[in-house]
Amino acid sequence: MPTAEQERGEADIRAACAANDFALATRRTLELYGPELLGYLVAKTHDEDLANEAFSLFSEHLWRGLPGFRWESSLRTWVYVVARNGLRMLQRKPGSRHRPKPLSDSVANQMVAKLRSSTAIYLKTEVKDKLARMRLKLEPVDQDILVLRVARKMSWIEIAKIVHEGEGALDGPQLKRNAARLRKRFERAKATLATLMRADG
Image (cartoon, rainbow, N blue to C red; front, side, top):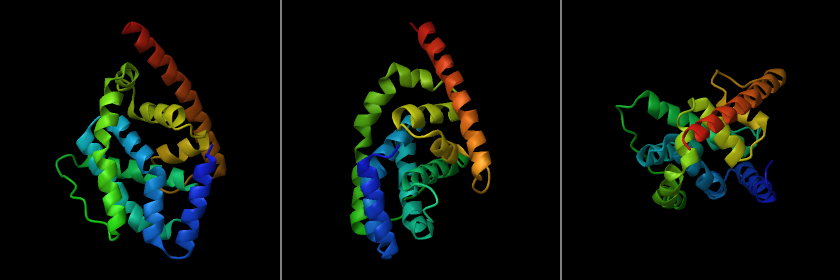
């Protein structure tokens, strides 16, 4: 469920897009969702360099993609899809390193650099956490579901949109079926995680 701050922020970003001020829309999106997206990438990869690369790639795709975003889902859901897809691109080509291109807007570029430099503190606390270590033993999709549902408090519909692997968007009935399937998978993942935690003492 979006917070009041997120709802106000998304309304401001939508107004900036409607006015074709995509520099402002990009900056506001990074302010609103940048820290939590970077935290998600760190939690997902447990690799500061890879998370930073993925975040830089996300920022480029955000800058280019906002003009075409149709607001058929929440902006928050869409930016998670963009970030997750960027990470998958990097992971499919592990030998090639991504060279971040400077964003056209210098303020947005400075914000990306600031957010990337702040990941070390998050990484130190998250990676050392026992639950985070146990979570790494789960399948990647189960890790995603746990982070998005527990840490990000997203709805099952939002999660179904984010973790969808196929081409094109899901329609209403498919989306509801996938959301129900992910909810059951979440319960199994929680049970597995509890078993791993008990076994680890």
